[in-house]
Length: 255
Length: 255
DNA sequence: CGTCCTATTGAAATTCTTCAACACTCGTGG
DNA sequence: CCACGAGTGTTGAAGAATTTCAATAGGACG
Image 1 (tube, rainbow over the protein chains, first blue to last red):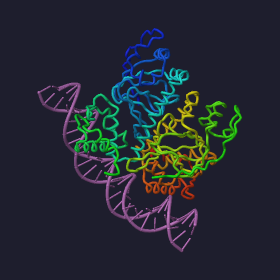
Image 2 (cartoon, each protein chain N blue to C red):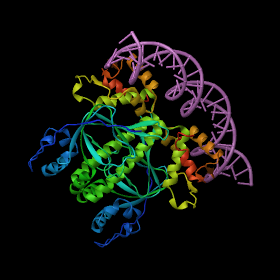
Image 3 (spheres, protein in one colour):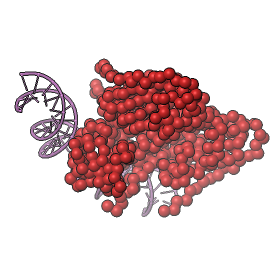
Image 4 (tube, each protein chain N blue to C red):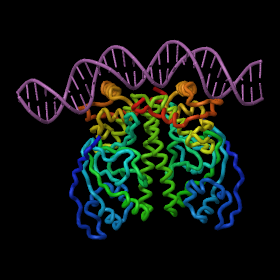
């Protein structure tokens, strides 16, 4: 099975005057909240020499499970899904990542998960050995990577609780609540109402929640009918009362 | 709900001659395979001043979810289970740890999971701030902690695949296979046959696999009837053919 | 011997999946 | 402009897997 990866390389490589902040980093979110914030200007200059920015179309595979790790990336825009497969092809999405997350397993010889663009994604990527060299020079960089790993670990465990112990209805509420918190935090009105585009299609939601497409669809319909969410056009959702949604995330003892 | 923690403190604190390897570290597995291997003798001496060894009885709680983090530990012996709860009391075990694993989430203000002894456990524990001070001095220590976090992340994701996409039968096979690999690696005969004690009771297995006690029991019975495992006394299991068990871990396309 | 705890087994109930049909949207081409 | 088809999502009914409820069994211990 051959898959062609379409990468639109944007030619943003530039002449860099040493000891000045690289232009391509100046307005970058990863420079502040991402791992690049751990780097000095000099280190950033060094890194940016090996950096390329890509735009990856939605649904394009970025890395394969089991493949030798060659590059790491920062997400500049869009949503990335991480997934694993069973031998007979069942899929489980085991994580979602948003800007300015770091993508990849540091120090790992091969990818333990598949990486795919859930939406159109803009990446800033660099070779494995460049990152590892920088890491060995900068404890602060390793610390940031470690914090990112710990964040992913915390989320993975949250989802284990969801997958192991929550009903289909709770999972859907949990998922929508999670997305609401991670996407477009600017799109919120005062009272906690939010509207946003779900970055996954129904099949992906199913693969994330350990359900089938049909169950996902039915549960979303129920949420719509009960007024917890409003559906604009399959992807676009409005959540009038985020707290109400959160309440459906798990059945409280008194309900 | 008050829970009394019974800790048998073994009085192994000792006079330490500076710059010699602390006696209590000399035969310690964590010194080699665990995080302490990252430390110099001097650092080890410093750490061991704040170190206490405990023996924790099976089923005793070691830390609570949401509690302020005060101490970290290395496991010297036994099996520890990590778990999370929903608001209405459903439990999910989200990880198992074995000697010489490090227990706790570094840099975290409060515990994101509950920690409980699955078997009788021997711990070597030390205050949070001591570890963090050492970490800031030793990039190699942070690296080891990072590797431990990455290992846990990899396992968590493996289990997400299991919880989200595998049948009850596959989960049980998966669980037994996992335990077989992690417990008593010396108890194996030549051809891959192993026997060992399952460190969890049926209820814990259920909470780990996202099933009920009854389903766990039924699936174990099926494995026994089909000759994949032999049950000695509920806890004690023999696996004549480990590869056969692994084959049941997921249904291959051609079965 | 009785009690507590854990595990097993059976039968009914429930949740979710599977299979199947249909609906909606969007682009292409007649 | 409309028909067609592909891709995506919804809905219904039947089926399967797992849970729930209930009863029983076995072992450890006083």
